[in-house]
Length: 361
Image 1: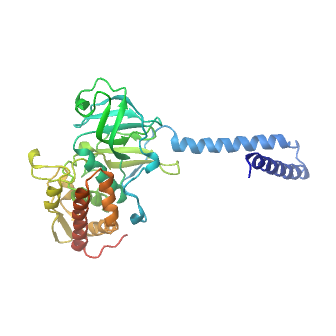
Image 2: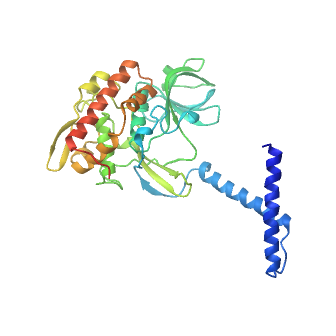
Image 3: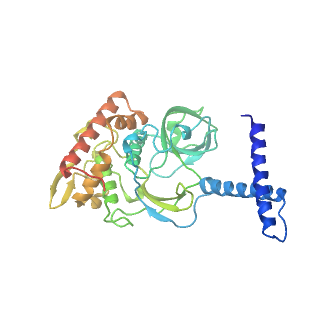
């Protein structure tokens, strides 16, 4: 059907509705008859207003008011999720060319801020954490926990780069780079910059917080310190409710060896170390003890067996293909994909065996 014909049919429909409305108004003895033109004009205004409100809720400025705390959501059919693209998907991935904004001096890893071809703002992170963080974020998201949208980009070029310090080593004089992790910085999200404590937050004592703690152990996240926790405020999918998401913002210290108290004993993205690291120490008196030596030790003193059973029912839904996809998304080699995914499957099976037959609640 042509555009012109469609428009004529829509206009005819409006006139028909207006005529019915006018007849009803006159039959009821209305004081001032409503003209067809006024009905058409008001109908257009109503539609335009509703559309504008919906758009504002989806793409408007970030929330300023405080919302409802959130830490987990039911992903329903976990086995159907795409762990290669993750929370964003292929259509929302960074689009070249990239334009330099400024260097980001926060944290310990070199980073720069850029805009892509669509005007979307991104942080590009470099160094050894980029692979681990992308892979971890895919698995964390699939288990129902909020993550920041990120993508591994094997190579690219940034226009207008200047004045670099820490990031100078990672970007060529022509703006070229390799192995960058792009993390989105949308203007629809408010970063509260309020690090939350593992043993003191709105979810203390819940199975959802226990699940996140177990996940940190499963991925060997030894750098799960308070400074790497944050609260992100955003509107829900309907655009009506503000949610305060309690998240782990840095998953870079994963897939290696947790080691002891010394930094020299810890590694990231190391297949051999990840395979050797123990996971569960045992089950006793209704609780499960994990082999953890990272920075959130207090959160794993005693995980109730029922909480661990619930989480086993969540993470146990991931398929082998999904696990491999998460590591492929991170730029892993074929050997790394196979080895990391195999060890993670072993840990999932170990958890399921320790807690008995898991059942979602």
